[in-house]
Length: 183
Image (cartoon, rainbow, N blue to C red):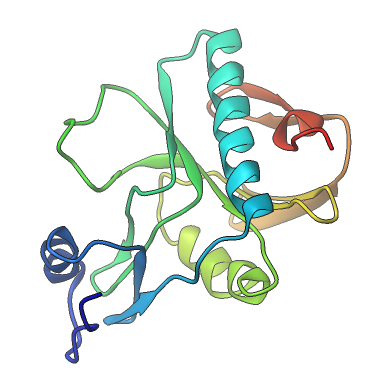
């Protein structure tokens, strides 16, 4: 594994660096952080979330696309996150791109090591991106979703364990149970 770069980086420098340094990283205020290894439950839930988003987009016949983890979302010039899943709408992105510039929905699957960051830094960071209207924090252990959404000049948060999430825009209906793999 390559060592993390010692100097502060911009997102553009980080994206260039990450091309030659395989692994999972995020850039926070110019500093590169390696992401911890995943547990099986976390990885399975990410796949289930991606499938649920894909099915909801197809059912609504929207010109949107889901993306699994691995895509970069730029927060500002020195911070970039890699959500566990996202949805963007409009034309297809260049197949060689590593960044999604206008996501509308971002999802983080919470784990004991990320729960605090997901609920604080990432919550405020994601909503600095004007295109993002929904941030879902999916907790596979508690089978709970915290749905943060833009509401006027603020953010509304709802805790849900059943029913259907309405993500409008873009006009998705997402059954909460579809985000969790059956035991």
